[in-house]
Length: 248
Image (cartoon, rainbow, N blue to C red; front, side, top):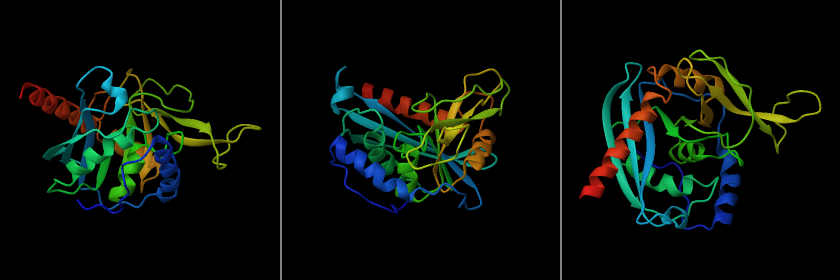
């Protein structure tokens, strides 16, 4: 896969926040999708030399991508890449730790995906530019963020059945969609029940996709577990690579 956009990575946290704000204008939150024939899941694991190195930015990132034929969800390729960490752990700046390794992994694919599911947030981010947005804008590929925990916003609990969802809301800096009297808030994502009676996941747009389409596609690649198959398999894949790297 080819990069659509490049920027430097040797940034301070302040410079990284400013870049997120700048690149946010490139995020497309309406559907600009090809016919979806392939779907990829992406995730990252870390090798840290010592306990406190999570915060310091030392160690290595192991990025994995698993590609499937859609809608059959038959796996057709998996690749990984290992890159040294260059950025400390800073809340809200996850992509500056993970995306360089992810881009290296995507660069090894023989089958370019039509859609990417990233383990993390997209638009549901304090500066509306989470890792799914960052990855989608750099690759110019439709991307969805599927996160296991809440980063920002509030919501009403969705129904207990698979496929039930409620909007994720947050106060908007730019207007956004109004909700309620005297409150100016923006719908930044969805809280989705992916299987009956499991904890929900947090779905948000990454790039070139509407929220409604993102929800439908996440539901379509679920297979009875809380975490959708693409990101769950990518998580297991990078964990296995990490174990092998540690033994070697």
